[in-house]
Length: 276
Image 1 (cartoon, one colour):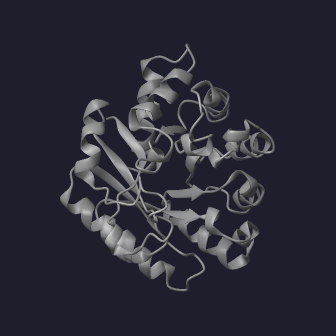
Image 2 (spheres, rainbow, N blue to C red; image 1 turned 180 degrees about the horizontal axis):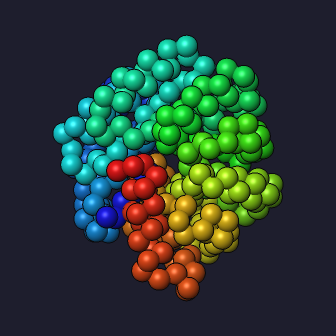
């Protein structure tokens, strides 16, 4: 099974997406399964994991309802606010949907990333460790230090770092991103999505080789069994087409990688992580 492990759908008139404005004309329109289907077909992908794009329960319910009607949606990653006393109630509602596969924590949107270390937040995560529920972690490179501390506080967390932790690819710097990712990779239940890289580069002037070092390091740290391909479509359209996103990753793969490793990257790992 070949899977795009990270993409989004939205309807602008739902008003969930405050970050999508007319100032981003390529994104300021509806994106639905019929729009992604040609790309899935071109790259022989069986379907995708749809990830929430707004921090609302309503948006999560919307994409879950969309999944009920669409065979190419293999799983839905919703949103939970672990500071909300009602988070378990929302989780129980999500679980009723057969295609609900996990939820995402949007550390990126937090004013102070160290707030994830507060006792209430840590205790909530420990509950979801017991549930063995997959958790996507949206984090920017300068927020990785508190995430390292969190993973030490909550051993056994089944998590995946979205967008390789958003290093500053536009500046082509590695540190302190690399040091933190080395620590994160020591946790064997943590995976990494090779996604969202083109939008961290110079949107107008990036070249494929700008990504090779980052990709190779992620593959070295996490190994072939803990990495996933994700297009981050349609957000990727800010900097690249779907085809270009795939090409960037393909060009960066080590020559030693054969069909077995590619199958893991382009589907099998996502299938196992999200328990499809």
